[in-house]
Image (cartoon, rainbow, N blue to C red; front, side, top):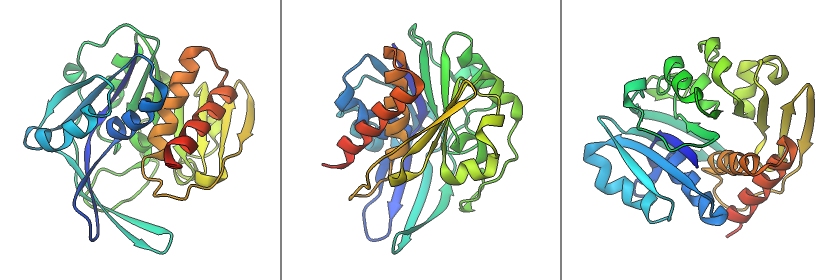
Length: 253
């Protein structure tokens, strides 16, 4: 069974009520279309459990709540197509002792919202029995309040325990040459312009089509769809094509 692990977030868009976000939620949206054995482990402050968690549960994938003390909160504003993001609150740190007993399986998707959430020792503990796909937000997002900042001040040791790394285009610009990171599989996404897969000393570009709706969560959907495809036996480029199709289907509704 595949595991998806991460913090939930409270997302605030000007003029709209707060909504749930984070890898567990957006991954669950994609999993409605995949219908494979996955278990989600979602964390948020106890005070937000009854507000955020039911919105994940109703999407149909089994969810286990992990008690927390803080909920990551982000504020978004738009100027045309340009999105500005503010960090209003940071989510919990997952220490090895915080990890629940996971079912046996080959893959886990770890979906941090900021660099502090999954330190190296926690990723190492998860990687002892399974392949880890890590979202690059857990490398480059600076864990401080205010305007979202990216930098490369992450522990490079963490990459030793990562089988696959998903980077948005702006994250890839921060970490440098994807082929030089020492990770077996690196996925760089360019939004509606597709993605590039780096594996085994090779790379392949995967085209995509523009999305006509708010693309928030597309990266999380892509990541879990990629893991599902790899777990099924797809090659890295095949899994990336499958993930691209899942995102297109999800966001074309």
